[in-house]
Image (tube, one colour):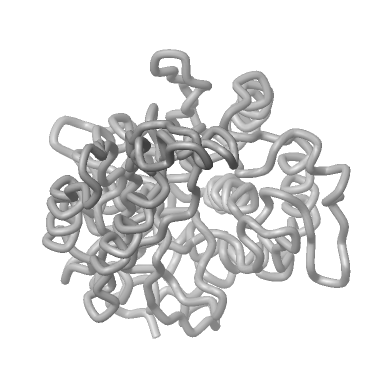
Length: 396
């Protein structure tokens, strides 16, 4: 027997009512995930949390498959709603369960509730987003609704380190999706994200020659001096008016203060708003040439996330979200950020992508990381409406 569709205004009201009644359950679920520390580099910790996340989504009515790539921790592939038929596209929901925080962080950043703010490592980025997804599915089922399109989800284990094991999985799912919804947090003022910069990671290695700094420094080739020249050349590649930034965030090398340094390494972060700028920066970095005679340069790395560019289709998806937000009594805006997410991959394939559908809060990758628990129900209701995709022709 087919479910009885609910008029959009009434559907929004009932979703919020059900989710508000389950707010405390959502908070407790977020705390449960946060208590399972899950740094990207710790496979055992990731596997422990993946087991919990898998069980929670199965309890919410999804079928869940664990996929490993090489030696990776599990990436969780979810299916919810009616099975896809040949040629039918799905709604794709993307999230991740790894965090930037090492094991033991809870000792110095304990989970605590202060008023409506819940503090704890990984809550904002993005364990609360996973709870929003879970409870959106629970609410859909509780109201007897079935999405018009199959709902596919990927909850990955390595987003914080560039998605090396999950990128291909994401792109495969995206090719069969009508649009992608990303559970990263919204911007600080609550706006959803329709643009993100592409992210590049490069390593510059300089080979010089060691010599005694006091006895015969002229026989050395100073890798640090060469690096100083290259730093100026690299920063000159930035073009802020085009949204292009470069940053050398880590420098290593040398042997001792009385030795001419024979080697140096610099790690370079690149952010670009367009593919053209990505190509320009890549070509320029690979064309760097030494200034000092006999110094040698090697550049490795590249762009690991393409830019997420706002397309007309992405704009239409945002406008639908804004209309659905009005049904919930929420005024939504859109914006962009210099950080990357797995939405960069889906957008680069031409799939309309809407990011920032996670929980409101602050402090991503910071010691004051927190979520606003009052925002959990309405954000889950918005995600549920985007999944259900109701006919808005007669909605007020």
